[in-house]
Picture 1 (cartoon, helix red, strand yellow):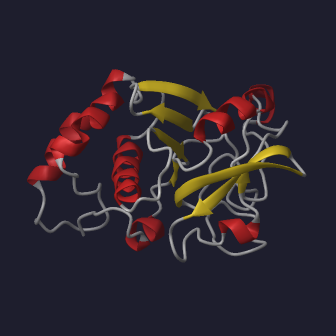
Picture 2 (picture 1 turned 60 degrees about the horizontal axis):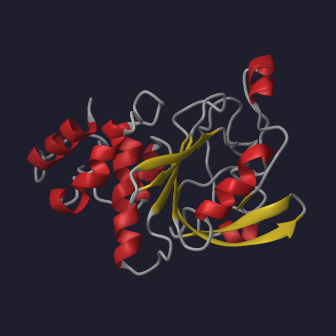
Picture 3 (picture 1 turned 135 degrees about the vertical axis):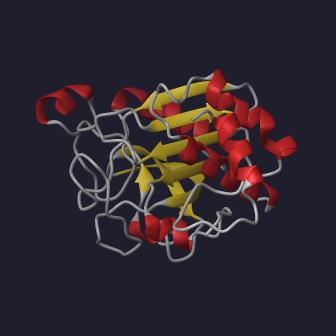
Amino acid sequence: MALTSLFSLKVSSIGKKNSGIVAPVAATATAMSAEAALYETLSLDSLGLSPEAYQYALQGHDRLQKEGKLRNDDILSIVDFSLPSTKKRLFVIDLASGKLLFNSLVSHGRNSGRDMATAFSNAPESFKSSLGFYVTGNTYRGAHGYSLRLEGEEEGINNNAMDRGIVMHAADYVNEKLARMQGYIGRSLGCPAIPPALHKKIIAKIQNGSCLFMYSPDEKYLSSTKMFQHTV
């Protein structure tokens, strides 16, 4: 379904009761119409990004922006864990210029699953990925070289990211050859690791106050998050 149609559907369904967790209530059309149109303009559907992930990301970005938490608010990054690790499931979008800057492989935590990330945690030493919204921090050089700190914005969902050392960094195991050989890329201890050939460029673009959203159609997350509205 096209995103514009998805938005129209959600507008017409506000106030109606539905069973289960469905796509979120649409934000004000005038405030987000240009960003919504990018989904079709950039052919993000053909690249595999789910319309739900994109719509949720826009709403969370809008909330963080209104709360004054974003200093680099032109950039929106989405990790779509509804895709397997063999797919390029990191999308870095410049909302101001209307360009897709990067579409890359990205790892999930080793205890989140093999090819698909299906289990998530905010707990230390869980070695699982944490869903939800993050604000990117500053860069540093650590055990994995040039890395980017991530501040989890959702209490009980990803707010332990800093304490857990959840950062964006490069990893040799994030590569297409390995994906072809074994059917999945290597996994991290919970960090969204990216290919060494791209990591400096990606980190330079998204650092210092941009929005990063890690998405999965996970019922526990969707019923717990307060970052966007959805019908129940």
